[in-house]
Image (cartoon, rainbow, N blue to C red; front, side, top):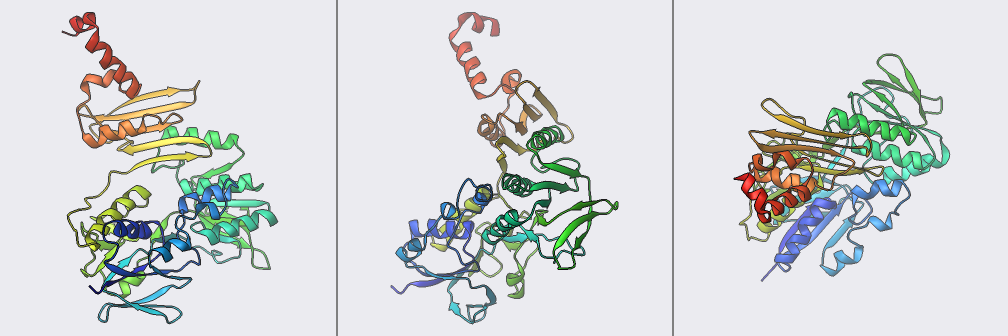
Length: 421
């Protein structure tokens, strides 16, 4: 039987995972062509930070070598950016004039760093932090310059700051919020993290609005100026103030988009021949930036591309498990605690650990852990199950082992059983 033609735009983690899943269940269904804007095979963007910190090399973070594409008969076109999707003739066209026809199209264009729309954002030494090219630019800057400013106190910003500090730069983190990682941590955990990072030599300017980047006569950035007039010297400015989905290509092709390319529960766009996965997607009004939801999307999308479409993607309950400069962090669900909730808090200054559990009607709805995250997966399971925890509420804070030990003791000790009765 003649194979169908599948074209994928983008060569990142979500898209290639979709191909991996597809090849497991329907290896002979498609002739596959992949357009990648970067000149690299698929690599793990999450591990760019260890590369910056000197803990790994670029070769270490490659997920699929060029030989993988060859072994699976995938026609890989690297360093070619697709500039047009012709949905009438079912063809994609790249910036070098190359093209490919499709029966099914998978858009996996990902996202890009948000560059603040302020004067000076085009100066030399002002970059985002998203890919191998950005990381190499930071490494080169660390060899030539001394002062770095990172704009953004989220995960990417802190990882960039940590890596540049290890490379010998004097690093300041600018953040418009009152605490770090406010989307992943509550205020107390954010303060603990800031104190720990300050002890490691990082500087912070919180609650600051960046108004302008000032340059030298040669056109390189030299300082960051805030809305209150204060300035920080800077030879390198890294923008890590969020991401934006790459949806322009889909928009120009007439596909409905909002915060991303609009898809249904099968990851199909408005055009049933066109699928989309990853950070460029908006599903039920949500655009996900974490790897786990994107890989869940990949499994569902692959099943439908394989014409075995029994799966549905219904959204993801996201949990964040991070290691920032050696500090373990975990959060899931409503860790901030909204109306009608109760919080149980354990704050241990001796061990430096902090736990906050949020309950509503005796159901665990959120958790925030700093330092000791060993029970994170268990708390996430409880949140997902939505089970009543009234019977273990007094021991919940001490983790799964403590609850299991109590349950085991109660079931075997007749005196405790008599007391419980």
